[in-house]
Length: 116
Image (cartoon, rainbow, N blue to C red; front, side, top):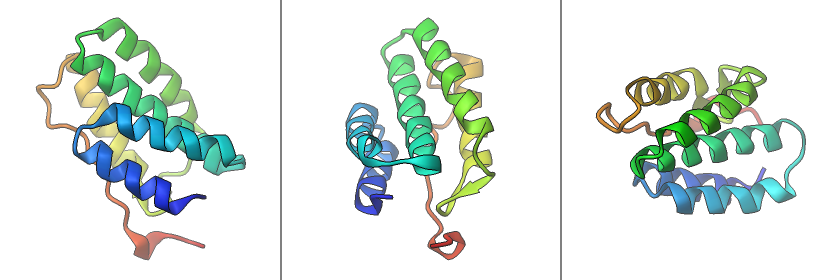
């Protein structure tokens, strides 16, 4: 895993700079394999879904999020120090409303829960 790219993407995502986070993670995704690749694809699609919501493309948001949920189902509840259950719950709240009135999802990486 390219942890520098992961953390940079997290910082951008938390600033609601979804396109930039997507781009950073995509560059890392191209070099990743296995579960890391699946995890990055999930994050990329989550960011893309939220970007669609911000732009008012609710159909696109729901379509991309449906694809992301398939990847999420294949990942553990905690991955690389990120609580994916909590993160998914927050995005689900946005998708249910199909607008950004719910608090924007954020990513937190707890390094104490990271197995190397």
